[in-house]
Amino acid sequence: MHEPIRRKLRPEDARRSNLALVLQAIRDTPRLSRADLARATGLTKVTISDLVAGLLASDLVRETGTSEIGRPGKPSTLLELDPQGRDVLAMDLSAPDQLRGAVVSLVGIPVLTRVRPLNGAVGEQALAAARQLAAELVAAATRPILGLGVGTPGTVNRAGTVLSAPNLHWADLPLQDLLHADLDVPVRVENDANVAVLAERRIAGGPDDLVRVHLSRGVGAGLLIGGRLVHGAASDAGEIGHVAIDPDAPRCGCGKIGCLETWASVPALTARIAADPSRRDAVLAEAGHRLGLALAPVVGMLGLQRIVVGGPPGIATDALLDAARDVIVERTRSPFRPQLELTASALGEDAVLLGASDLVLLNELGVT
Image (tube, rainbow, N blue to C red; front, top):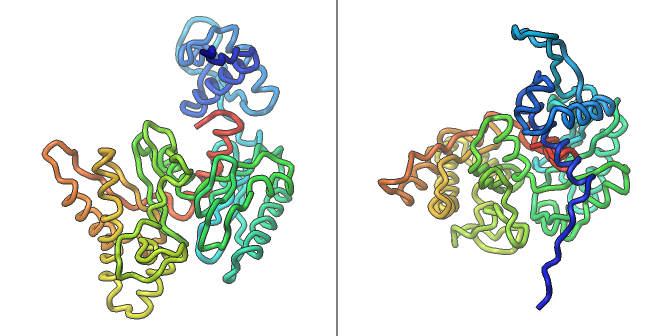
């Protein structure tokens, strides 16, 4: 019988973990003193002093005044993330007709945005547009770059390879490696709905157990359980857009008949509404009904209470949301189940960009 392999904890691993702990505390509660950090993290004052000195020297943290709390002795110096310490780059590849990029400060505020129209480009042309946009963001950065986060449609594995994005005609595309080779900065590529749900939790105050549906070029869902992203065994957790729910619907770009995406994606809904504007609410309600059919088993199995739907304001309307909620409630009804909260996202079109910048902080600094 083989002995289990035990990895020895190296000093640099412990230091990296402690740095992440301190940065997380400062991000969660700005204007903490060193003594506050010691209490919040459980680390010794000597350790905190050493870690903070390193963070100040690397321009990740700055001192910002002194505490006004009346305590004996010298006033405490307060700390916060330095918004000018690094630039974080973010890209959203999910919209039907354009690619969006932003340079974001270390505290999550977009400094500038760039938009590159797609004009129907797919395949190699769409890839070229994404690479050009990334290069523009690097050129626009004015501070050291912490990294680039990318939210893209499709199934994305842990290595940042887009395994399948039918609407972009991408398959087995090593997007993360390509962008890293182009830019020579850290790059993290993730499914668009996955990064959007990160933003819903941190910025919009969502719970640790949360589904965020993303209606755009396709239909996807990001799932948090216990505050952690669920990727699934094949990196395809949340791909509800390719769940077949209507045998009478058209053939989907993935090859199957009746996928949710043929009903609830922005291009599909826009086309249906344009064909008969007088039926706008009815079309959106029909899509909401089918969205509810796809989500009800997920809610029933995981016991979820909160669902957020993101999409253009003219799509994520009450007609769609009410229909989806009604179906889910009817199909998961139980005297023990709390009332389902299903609402439109408050983050607008920036959810993927903000989530992509959070992805960089998570991967580079260990901060969520």
